[in-house]
Image (cartoon, rainbow, N blue to C red; front, side, top):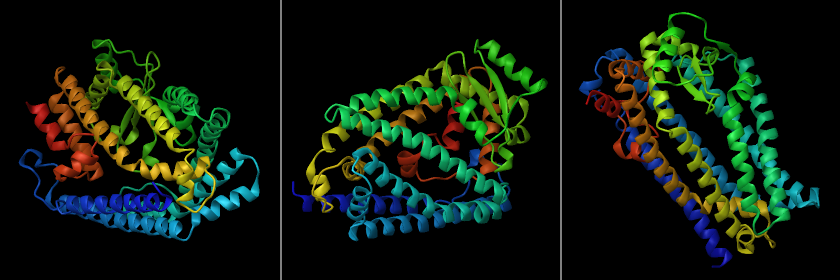
Length: 410
């Protein structure tokens, strides 16, 4: 394969991926105004449903503008020899290959971050504000930005430096050492995310003694599920949307409930949500997802190792010698078709796991309560009740509300 042919394939993949997403999003958007399925009637009144349709249409148009902008900028950067110029600048700044790659990726990261700020600001303070979801102040937006930037530089930079170091020491087998490092890093993040990362952005307070805590602990005890701690997180300072999640595993499991969830759901409905999450643990979905994620990381790193030292990857962008950062950029695009397939398979498995977790809650008599909770959560976030089937197949990690309703009622 010649460098010129590889460049053509590279551009073709970018264009095809953009057009495919464009068409799929358009097909899905055409169903925004479909009538609510009879099984889900009562979630909205007529005025609320019109507002929810307007919200989805507004986000669709905004996402379309953002994706077109990103697509055009990327093509311009490629055809104006942006990667070659940036590679040259990085090499002029240092003779150390690790520093060169860090400068190269760092510049791309900073450029992407700066470009994303106006879009993020508009989404929060115009779209989300217009529909009553945004509770974030401008000062909090700035604080979140710099905190996220700091974490990305520290954590992302550390991971990237480690991988570059492994590549320098073990050019052919670096993927094995990088994979081992990523496995340890992922497990540590799972264990300490809630206790270390979350407090940088939110306040976590133990759930106070009372009826809700008694209800949750009673269910946990009934199913022999040890909960280390139950926390309330101040999600309402950013959005009215509700959520809940688990973190950790083994004997260090933490339940985190958004304060907005407590306002929207009854105690029994929150217990139904807990029962669903416990189902994930009882069915070992957390372990399966972690193992599959680590296996996929290893597979990706292995494929990267086969390409990374190929000079044709660099020559496709007019660079004479192969290097890690150019090889990674080209590989990331060439890997897109494989990533689409792996993401699709992971989504199929995830939807299966969601059904199993729902069924676990159902066997303890929480079917109706879970349905009520899901309806309220869908209403509070204006989620799409009528998505296109193919869009669901390609992108949804959870079954639709209608599919979950049908399953829980069987």
